[in-house]
Length: 76
Image (cartoon, rainbow, N blue to C red; front, side, top):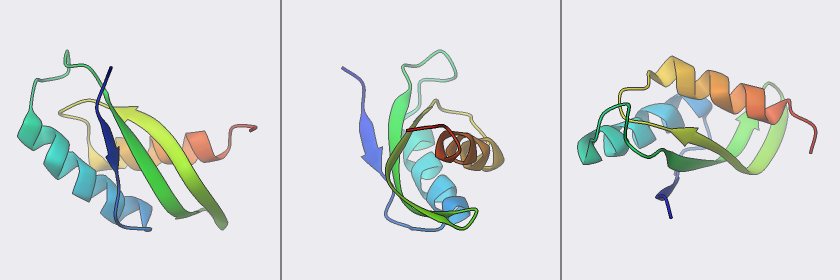
């Protein structure tokens, strides 16, 4: 079972930096098993709870924010 990390910030950019700091500290490189990042906050005018995206070490903050946006716009 993979790791799960809940972002403390409700701002997507701040949350991305926060979780990447922890994920990159753990390490493992891009071939590592992804960590499920859970986000609770606002994206593009909507409020989301338990929005989850997989993130591997080395991912850029911009890519994490884009993954959150993509997940937010998926039908639930």
